[in-house]
Length: 296
Image 1 (cartoon, rainbow, N blue to C red):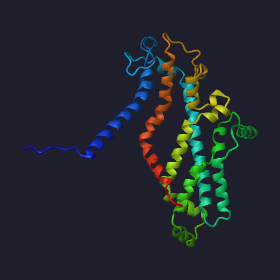
Image 2: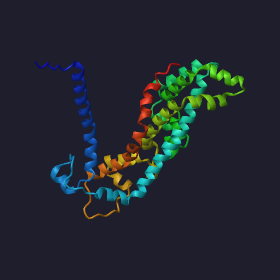
Image 3: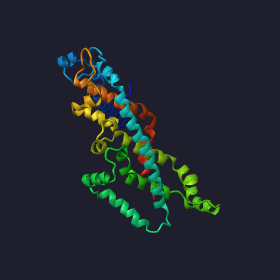
Image 4: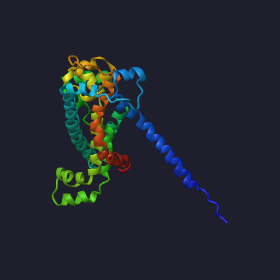
């Protein structure tokens, strides 16, 4: 007599979970695949099949050839982006660590008042126009520093780092003080080595924020040669002026690619570096979820 096999509730849950995850992966991958494949589509195929193409009939590299001919402007935009990411992230980390360490000192007079003032800035701000007037009065209009200096400290990141610093046992710092260490030595030789995961996570958040930012440079930068890659991408996607920004006005080809292919190719070029780097830094995003739970 054969025994009846019953499907447990756990197996049903796993099957449903797998199906939902596969559907979620498809929902994420199909738009990405569509953009990549559209960059290889010719004008004739766009006219015949429409703009939603997952697998092109024939791969056309005209869009990438045009981008290659204008590589000087694209590399310049990449240089502006790398300058913003490198210098901006370094200065933000320096200011954030210094401010967070100061507020984490329990013997700091007025620490509660200063912390309350910092939290207040998370709830209220002057707005876009007052900020623009301040930057203009400082002479930062059309300067790369306008994209870096106004946001040197991320309030939330600073508070997270402050809470992590406060969680370090006081006994370690007291032992260092007995050995004759000053505050700078305590910070550099004790606090920072114990906070590597937090520092790496917050630095990553700052870097990704700078890489994706475009709105502030649109407001403060007037010279095309100073625009980062994201603004160049925006111009290509939203307006015909983006073609001039890429320097394509004098580029001649036998059969120019469709606008959709140019836009898709520019998106691929601008996102390729971060896609290549992300698998190596993804673990820090996971750690970043846990950093905020440290009690202070």
